[in-house]
Amino acid sequence: MIITRNLVKHLQQMLEKFPVISLTGPRQSGKTTLLKEFFPDYKYFNLERLDLRELILSDPLGFLRSSGEKIILDEVQNIPELFSYIQVVSDERGTNGQYILSGSQSFLLNEKISQSLAGRVSVNHLLPFDLTELPKNLKKDYLQLIHTGFYPRIYHSKINPIDFYPSYLQTYIERDIRTLRAVENLNTFTRFLSLCAGRTGQILNLTSLANDTGVSVNTVKSWLSLLETSYIIFLLKPYHNNFNKRIIKAPKLYFYDTGIVCSLLRINDEEALRNYYLYGALFENFVIAEIAKQFYHSGRQPLMYYYKESNGKEIDCIIEQSSNKIIALEIKGGESFTKDYIKNFSGLFDEKLPIQIIKYLIFPGAKKTMINDITLLNWTDIPEILGN
Image 1 (cartoon, rainbow, N blue to C red):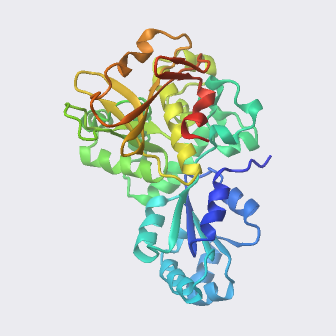
Image 2: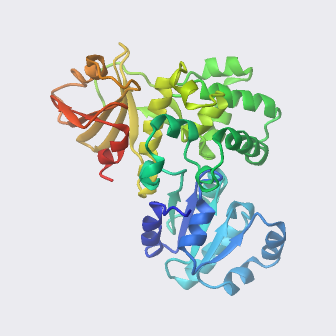
Image 3: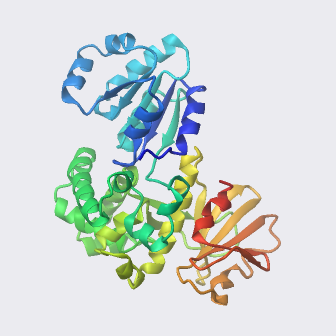
């Protein structure tokens, strides 16, 4: 079962405008499948193959010139020397759509792109499936989706998530973490990752996380950076747009895939998820990660934030559409509506500000309706927020 990824259309458009496009994302997010399936006229080279790397390194310029104008270089960060040669050859030809560069380690790939290919490359990101990419029969139960996660191999090969994620995480830690940064104790890093899972949806407290892990604050900062650049977590920054109020300044921590969180927290089925003490945070993570994925898969950068005042008043997600228009989302995991769900919308920001606020409440039991100026939506209606 090959599922057409939403990003394909955008990639095709970018190939008409740039000589080089890059595609990054976590391991197993479907990058190789996408490139082979939807760009069959490009020659494909997997640079994880040691023999191929040795061949290319013996004559990089000769390899690029003899391979033609349409080339996919997968895991290209394995040959950092190649980027300067790609610049030379693409400039010589002066045509668009020459190279597709793909990789799972965005830090290494983006570093080389910024050094050698700035202004010549369109940068794109492929994450695990978003809701709009799944067939209807696979998105009936939100608890099942949160627990299963969205990695393509789970759906293609019908793998039980409790079998998939432990192996995935072990491979990620042993391969990518060792490659990207010298982590002396992988067991400590694994504990750190689980502690991050227990803080999903929470405001990041570096000191607390460092103390619980048994490492320094600087180590925590370094390890968080690793998790970000390998698309395991993302940090949602606070929204402050010059409001004259005391606001919280630390970011919130979320995972791109809730299946990974459930695995790290040893939540083995949907019933355990429903009764888990972090269920509300996991539902919130599910919704916010879904919005981020849909932004990336349409070729857009997600301008997403959260808002919290020092008095405790909070909005779960702010999406900035323009300088004078925002979307404000409250996300609740309970299936039965109560007025408490929308209390934080009251007196939101300063009513005198010249800004349009579109308000949504997302919760599992909602049927699309309006309460005053607030639209109530079910989780299945998330694409409507972004116009997808």
